[in-house]
Length: 264
Image 1 (cartoon, rainbow, N blue to C red):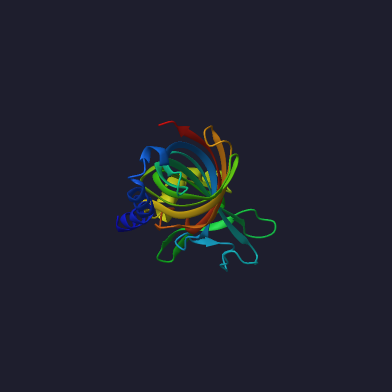
Image 2 (image 1 turned 90 degrees about the vertical axis):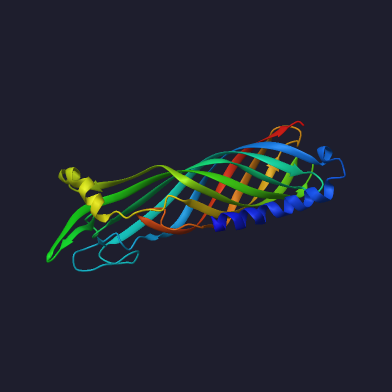
């Protein structure tokens, strides 16, 4: 909550200052409102959680290194969002807030040797009795609903083409669905999937937040529907332990959006 208040104050301060300076100069002429409909993709980077006990072979343990076997982890995210922006024409900047859905998919895959398309997962270690199972992949899905708050500045603007920079943060207390699945090398192990997941799973953080920035272009007349494309600069996860398979710390990506003017 403390991080939320600090970032919110940081984003809101420039717009509040601009508003106080322009309050005597016909605010209705200087301010415009827009609705944004957005979709995009995120590509986070991170590492496999140390609590996931993976072995390429029974006698050695390597992660992301050349060996008898190799392990890969990959996470991607898809987002849909809608937001309302209050924009100052004089200072070419605006602040917006909305609602965003982001669906993440993480996968751990690998092989134990050149002719074995599976890795070993340790799921039990009781006294001297250690149990492994052969796994082709482990996948995890997370679906977050968050509130994005963004500050946008348009330093270069003409009638049909503009460039903008954006900074933002998103905050969520809701994960609509979290599900993990194991693709066993031996399908007879499917009946033990829930028990194995209970043994290797860890409690995740339901509160999800990020801090990000982007650069983009706007195409179209400002009085009509505009088309926007933006690329995320290296951006960061503010919260930890949101995923049970991987530890993620930063992400990149891109986003498309439509901007609809609201005539005041």
